[in-house]
Length: 449
Image (tube, rainbow, N blue to C red):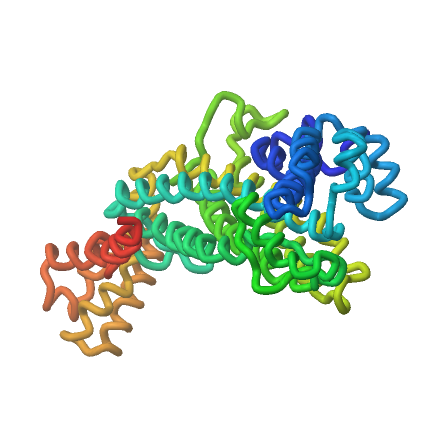
């Protein structure tokens, strides 16, 4: 079958998602996780004397996705609307007639699908956590290295006041640390078994129901919820929302790097290798490819968040439609988040920083970026209003005659009568007007100690 989604294409797929995440949330992985749940259920019930030990062993041995008849499973899924019925039938046939009668004992389709999803998400978040840790470490190293590397801070894409590149890295870093902390809080809520039977009451197992749920959870190393969550989708929705917030954070960094890579700016660059980011017609091009694919995949995740949130409106004890939207959205959200994070990690680990170009750009306005600093320095001597007027006039003169702000200030007697050339030079030095930038960098880095 030809791939319709570029993320599943043998060509386009190298740009979207990662192979590791495809291995965690792809079709075969999810089928294997369903089989893992069925096998764990049989073992749990065997331990409680509900299912014969021989049947549990046979079911466990047969629970391998590579032994499934996929065309047959597809046909059964088309007929019933879910893969579980056909999967259980094939599992029983593989396990043998004696074991087949004990497969899926007391469970309902959604028990298997939801618990399999939780197992897949556990794998998915382990992958995301690994790359998130690496990205955090790389940005922390950049923040330390460039704590005092002065550059132009920009608002509305214009020079505003001096900052440092370490400060900019710390601004990217802080919400990633938040994301890691939030993930650590989310996982205990997410990694819970689903076992409730037809309407969540476990009536088919009588008094044994809660014990089976607890034994199944132990088999799968999952927590036991206080009540089955068939129609309470808050945790899986929160998982996708977490992806959306993370991708928004990564988009901020990618946007900044992309703008800093512009020819006229040229202060920071993505990692470079021969041919990367090249053009078919313009040999000089070095396009921000990683940044572009962070943004593209983040937008894909952001489109999926409302899809999952709208699927929370489930009716009564089993939904008639909303829940079926989750398989369209959740694996894709995980895959695209992994792709965005992988590209961001590569940027963080391999970016090149041109501190000399930062300094030249900082000086491009002849010191006008220090106008606020000069005004605040002159205000105690001249008064705030007079200081503002003096600096405004000096900026106009510097712009008109293309001279440094310090030289223009020196022509103003109200200024030169109070400050000598050295004092004016110090007042217009960007490195003297960084406020608490260094302190803020240190505070962010302290969160990692």
